[in-house]
Length: 347
Image 1 (cartoon, rainbow, N blue to C red):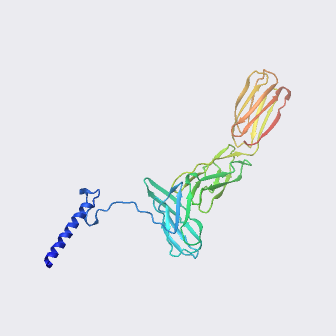
Image 2 (tube, helix red, strand yellow; image 1 turned 120 degrees about the vertical axis):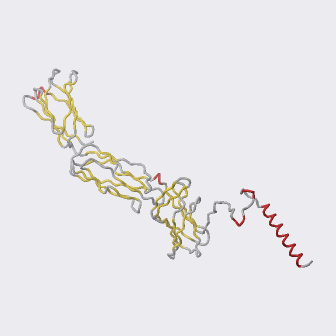
Image 3 (tube, rainbow, N blue to C red; image 1 turned 45 degrees about the horizontal axis):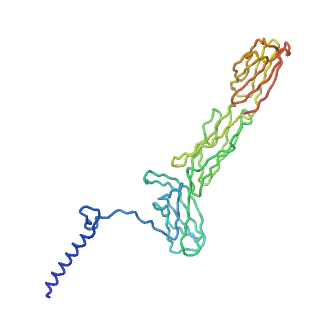
């Protein structure tokens, strides 16, 4: 066979092979064949790469992608930063020399944001964990937290002002995160009644600090109980569950009352910071109420007609401060006023 015939035969075989290849490699593309020049590239989910060291990050049981991780070997050499991968949530490291000894894995301070399938936002503070390498093999480290389960509490659960004013009182705000992945939180103290302030009023916990003393300063007279509840958010705006505390007045309030046998009577209070009291006088002989009303701190006087006899029951109360009840024999008091005292402690 001459050279021309051989050449013609090779051209024919090449053309036939091309046709057969196009006919067999079918896809879901139009016409059921691959597009030429590699343009028909099907989408796929990449298989996460693995390494001798894998550092996992988990938040509330969910693997978190895109977290920047470094590892430091016993000689002080730093590998990375590498990012945790989708789906598996770990960063893979393949050191060329897997030194025996103590290594350190670190989650760097960072914000993480991605859509999968809804927007996910996280903020983490520098977190470190030691692990030991002893020979060849695979090693893993896990950083985890349960953001929704983290707690910020105030102690003690109830406190009392020792005097009317001025006075400083301290409480402690404690952050109790779950896990070894640091999630900082911003704490805001409540706005209290006029003349009662907190210092500091805002602060951050979780960046290496988990407790903060707060001083409550009272420079004005105020006797009602006060709800004290800090507001806490992580750096993405997620609100942590509140932990309320109640502040009571803990100083004594003096109730002074006087009367005479002409059935004149008076009521005076002191150290009560100007609250309103309700008072009531009832017959001890079953003839009903003989008088009632309300008084501001400082006192109220009046008179009544006691047709029931010479004994009355007396009550003065304030829902925030307390209640005093007693019995008075007005007829036996004589012409001049006689004073009675009662001291009630804070509620």
